[in-house]
Structures are given as C-alpha cells and as structure tokens.
Image 1 (tube, rainbow, N blue to C red):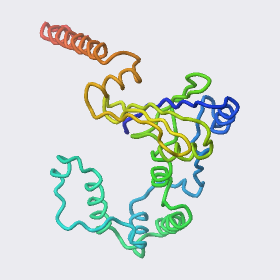
Image 2 (image 1 turned 45 degrees about the horizontal axis):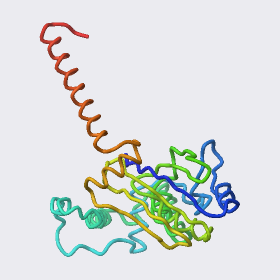
Image 3 (image 1 turned 180 degrees about the vertical axis):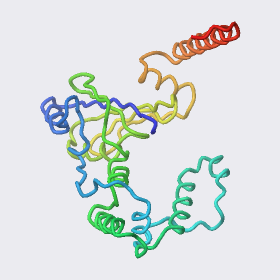
Image 4 (image 1 turned 90 degrees about the vertical axis):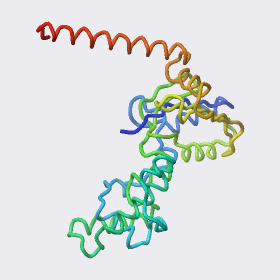
Length: 257
C-alpha cells in the first residue's frame, strides 16, 4: 500500500471563476469534488492491467528502457544512499534482460502486447498505471475528498501530490490564484505548501524533515501541535504496554480471555 498524502487545495480570485472551476472539476460520484479526468482525461484504451511479460516485451521492442548500468547493482548501497530512482532503473533493466522476446509470448499475451504497443504510440504509456504517474503525477485519482469551505477542497493521493494536474488546472484558469498545502502520513516528510498562478509558482515552503515539518504536518493532518501529538502517542503506547503486561500476568495465572 502507498503512503497517503493529504492535500488542501484553495482558490482565490473572482467568485464566478472559482464557482465555474469547481463545477468543471467535480466528478460524477457523490462527494467527488475533484476528478483528475476532468482536467487531464485518461483514455479508456489504457484501462488494462500491467503484465510483466507483454510489457517487458513491448519495452524491449521499443528499446524503451533505462541506460544499462556500468557496474553490477549494489542494492544495499543504493538503499543506504536512498537513490531509489537508480535502484528502480537498474532492477528494471535487469528484469528486461531476463524477459522473453515478443515472439515467445502466448496468444493472450501477444494481444496484450499489441495493445500496449498501440497505447505507447497513441498515449505515451503502456497502461493506466504508467500514464497516471506520467500525466497526473500520482498513480490513482483523488480519494477521501471533502469540501472544506466554499473555495477549498481536501483530498488524498498516493505517494505524492498530483502536480501535473495542478499545472493543467492553473493553465485552464490563469486568473485564479491557487494554493496547495499537503502532508504525507509519514509525519514530517514530503510536506509543505506552494501558491501558483497561470502555471507559475508564486511562493513555496518545502521544509526539510525536522521540527518545522513535523509541526506543519501535525497541524494539517491532526489539527493539533506536534508536541501535543507526541504526548498523545506516548500515552497510547504506555496504555498499550500496560494492557500487554496485564494480559501476560493473566496468562501466567492461567486465566485465558
């Protein structure tokens, strides 16, 4: 499962423009206040699940893979340096080199291979997953949405904010000033805010992990200070420890619940 990133997106400007914007991005489902498809639509062609055999074959056929590593992959070193992109690229290349050629696919895989090739040619991605990451900036549409007030909405996304969607929305409504505040559930990491207008960042704050980022995330996610949140967590941990100790004592006394 991904880390969930909570965002609050606010709009400032002409009220008629903001109302039009909110109507235009609203989805068809109940409480769907923003639908990325209304801003950057995904083709139905892409609604196929990734299959390593056909996708590896398509990437192999199109030479669509990372530059071969110059030296053997040192997984521990890459993890220690948190160079996740290099790690992913190297593992991806290694997977491709071990994969089958297109001619070795069975009939069902061959049909999927052809669809993926066509998708890459027409839409720039093999499946919904790659397309969403490339053209939305996150792998899923927005979820757990709410209307904060008349000019602000909240929602969650997987791993990161939908920066490509925000860029497009800003282009669609160049006179509306937008601000997004966001925080990862991994408290204090991947959080901050920025304002933007007409596809240009006006102001931003992206604190490095520390007291400032933890305070920001605690306020956004829990509506309380980081100090109070830590105290609450410590109390919960102490209560859990007490419950575990009492359970062990009952088991020692032969009392089973």
